[in-house]
Amino acid sequence: MIISDKVKDAINKKLPVVALESTVLAHGLPYPENIKVFEKLEKIVYDNNCIPATIGILKGKVKIGLEKEEVIELINNNPIKVGTREIPFAVAKNLYAATTVSSTAYLSSLAGIKVFATGGIGGVHRGDWDVSQDIIELSKTNIIVVSAGCKSILDIDKTLEFLETFQVLVVGYKTNLFPIFYNGLSDKPIYSVNSPKEIAEIFNSKNNLNIKSSILVANKIPEEFIIPNNEIENYINIIENEIKLKNIKGKEVTPYMLSRLVELSKGKTLISNIALLENNVKLACEIAKNI
Ligand code: PSU
Ligand code: MN
Image 1: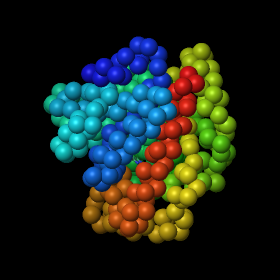
Image 2: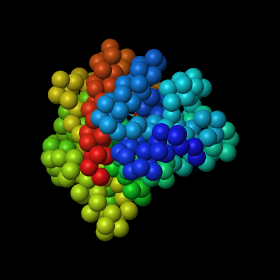
Image 3: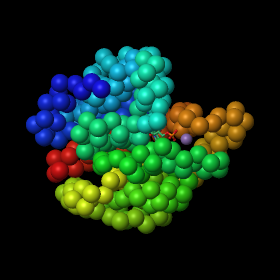
Image 4: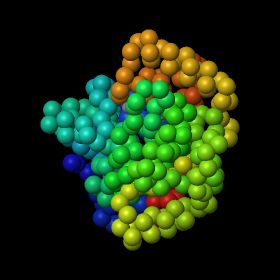
């Protein structure tokens, strides 16, 4: 595992570090927006006096703290999408690989990073049995993950039940309803927290009590980027039919849905996705500074 000098120095000096994943860049956003998003997110982290640590695997080398050139190299080399279980496969076979929430959380915590910002976590899909590794990883890894809840393409009830079963504490940031995107809030109640300091205190209490699981901080999508529920559901219906017809399964499901949403909404979901990522990164910085 290679940790960039900047990130290593920050960890040693106990400066606030915010981890970022590479699957959202390589498989969740189109080119060239993904490169621009990477730059923008890094800038937000620096502007908020924290150090960014984007994580990915380059020719079998796990890298914590990818530079822009490395992100471009990763994206240009058609990386596979790896959750935690596939990390050793990518490493042993010298592959390019983009890390998801599960693998990024695992590697961040291995490197000593305590806060990680993403767009949405994977969860339980609607229909056929398909549960993301993200939830299982969050049950074992000690990290704070900031996401905009999850995408409404998932089965929200089952996702929340799974998070509970696997002992992942879910807290809503200034909301007691679980956020989903792109349509705002679900009607599912969750505990609410009101400040980054409170989140840091919960994390510290958890660690003092030796409870080994993550905290999922669910941050509302900014109001002006909400897309109405009926519009999104309409797209999801279309996409689910395509998935059946084309027999898309497993790892391919989420990236397919994300890219089709962008096409069907004529770019609206892309704009929302970028906005919520930025919003989550800002909150992650505030939490990191309070730990
Ligand atoms: N959901 C999103 N955006 C994303 C992902 C999920 O709204 O970019 C990505 C994340 O990297 C997440 C992964 O960890 O997809 C989950 O994939 P799967 O459902 O195959 O476990
Ligand atoms: Mn899956």
